[in-house]
Amino acid sequence: MKVTLCSISLINVCHAEESINGRGVYLGLFGGGGTLSSNSIEQTGVAYGEDEASNINVAAQGTSGNTGASIGGAHVGYEFDGWNLGGKESGWALNPSAEIEGYYLGSNPSAYALNPLASFEHRFSIQMPIEAGVFLVNSIFSFKTPYSHNITPYFGGGIGGATLSVSGANSEQITPAETGLNHYNSNPNASSSAFAASAKAGLRAEVYSHFSLFAEYRYLFINSSSYSFGSTNGASQGFPDHRVTSPWNVNLGSQNYNLAVAGFEYSF
Image 1 (tube, rainbow, N blue to C red):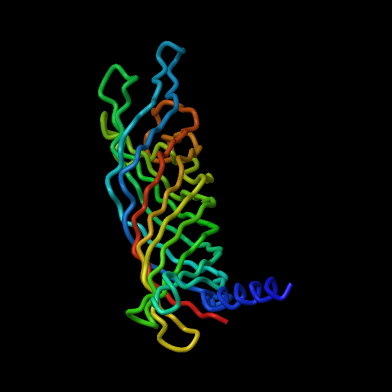
Image 2 (image 1 turned 30 degrees about the vertical axis):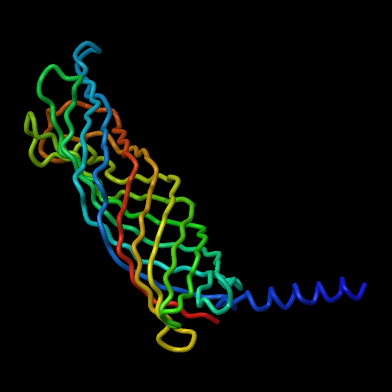
């Protein structure tokens, strides 16, 4: 029994020496920007003729170029006690954190889209200004190194969802030209939601007790989403003879963002 108690005591001492205190609860604010990589845009609908045979079916397809993006938000997390790596004398340690974050994301993908269903060249210019709210649950891993007690590298990732809002979308037919007519003009606003996932890596520097600055790279994926805009009201924009149309559906392919982010954290 004495041997067993001694063994348990030694194990507890060993674990105490190998553990390293975490920060506990922390709160962060951040902002930054980056790029949205090219993605697909498809517009579908019908321009009605006098009978079904004279209808013009539209399934215009295009690919946006890279476009700028902005980001700003906050997170709250808890950093747990961690472990020394390679023994207490190595200077290396690892602390895990659980984190919840939410942020605003803005971008404006646009594309030239060709309708292959028409018997003539039928092309549109589409603009989709997007404002998104992104909500993620993250796992973060922070490294203590022997090179600095104040600078901590970290990496992590998470999953969640995004609510996407498009305000003032525009689809202008450029071939044949209908300059100034927005085909979504009866309702150019729509919303959607989609799965989101993110990965990030960065450096955190403690500049005062409990107060840190950080800079990081993050990759954000938002799954494909669909939007329903209003039909074309030609008379409202000087095209009284324009065909009556169905409401327009737009499918936006998956979004891939590369972002540079900086901010500060306070641990309690």
